Image (cartoon, rainbow, N blue to C red; front, side):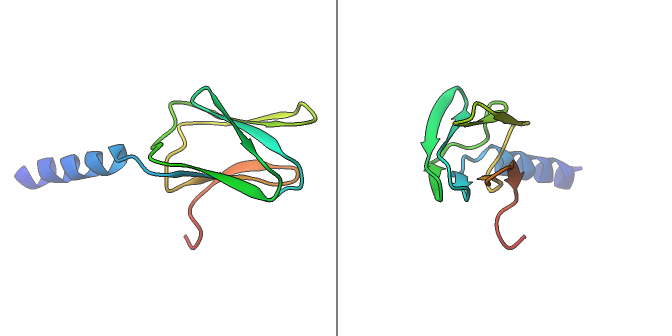
Length: 97
């Protein structure tokens, strides 16, 4: 029984540790990405790293200059990252997985 309790505590601690949330924009246009109510300008072919952000409180919204919005269901948790392309935005696992 003790083994199960210890395993549960370790798993919970791993989920609650803050991490850096990466947002990459491989598309040509600038976008605004809303994370936890804060707007972040992400240039075309650029990116933003939100240090020690941990999991988002809710959805992540990507706004394009055209007015089109893409809602990525949250929470989004590192090491997953937000990837914005020319026509699509999605949550992806870290590279190499």
